[in-house]
Image 1 (cartoon, rainbow, N blue to C red):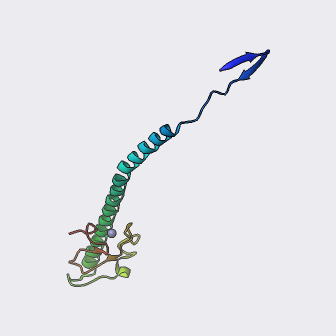
Image 2 (cartoon, protein in one colour):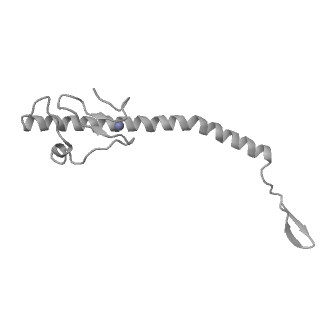
Image 3 (cartoon, rainbow, N blue to C red):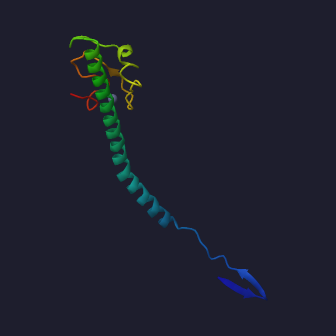
Length: 121
Ligand SMILES: [Zn+2]
């Protein structure tokens, strides 16, 4: 608001900050929103890691089967990492959750050291 005093325009500084109650309400709303959002974000991240891990395990399984067919191996033979990479896998996959892959025998599914959901049948 402007007020004219003795010919000069003086600005009355009527702007005020937020009250403590207003700030407390905003902080409360933000904390409630974060409390709702964070668990679902963590769950989505975990699901993405599980799906990526399963995809890597399928790629390893496919590489093992191609290795076995092309090299006339039996179900009990176990390829090494050097047998599969880089001949059958362009890059060696790594679990995004930090697990370590076990290749296993030809007839076994490869495993992730995390286990639980990080597995294929
Ligand atoms: Zn994994």
